[in-house]
Length: 310
Image 1 (cartoon, rainbow, N blue to C red):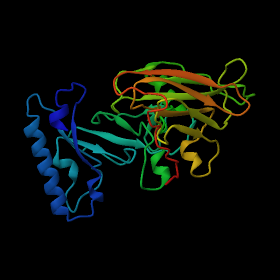
Image 2: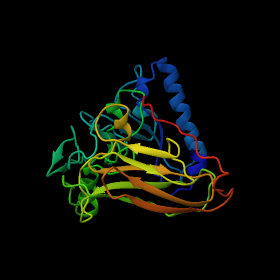
Image 3: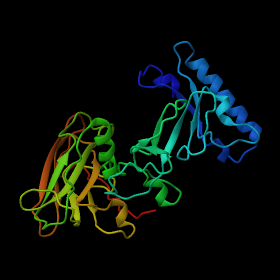
């Protein structure tokens, strides 16, 4: 990680672990590994130009050792409650931990952070606070642990995302969609050209339910995407279904929107259609470049991979 990314100017510190007190192994071995990792960090990115080595999630002791003392920067998780000045550079490396499905609430989810005038109270000895987390993610734990992001798993922002954008970038939130009479679908793509078909490029497709005037509404309908040379995670097509029952809820249309990644392993023109019974369909065309080329009737279609849930 350090060898690959050490020339990136956006990196200000390297984290050598997170909540290592959960390791469950012998404390002396955990401490020895962290000390070795910190030393290697200093070797690979040496001072005076190198970045400091941080220990994340250092709020609990490992055996009799407080792990924040092992590195150059300490990160404390758990909403930053009860952590006094440790006498070294530090920050709250996780706060929030608010589980919500989209759209969620228009608020920051400060949780237990001390708040003054609507913003976290910043102690002079603390560098700042970092939200847990930006994106929803997969998890082997209870599903509620994977929906703590301000952007959902399919990269559609929740309303809390717009709170942060408004507070820090001064961009007003959009008008929230409300229920109406569904008349059609809107389909957009993050790009209309893929310059490679080797699996390194994707297009992000967003489906929105609209009324007769084209205004986004919050209605949830069943939406099916189909196309030519294409590949969705489920194969040549994917269906978004409303509701909360498994397994459909994992690829559901929520608050009138759904999204998915698209890729192709053959060059050519893909016409992707979003359709739903009784609604006007929408299409988007994506041109893919490279080789091999898609040949109608000869190129084998993508394998169908029905989604079965966890």
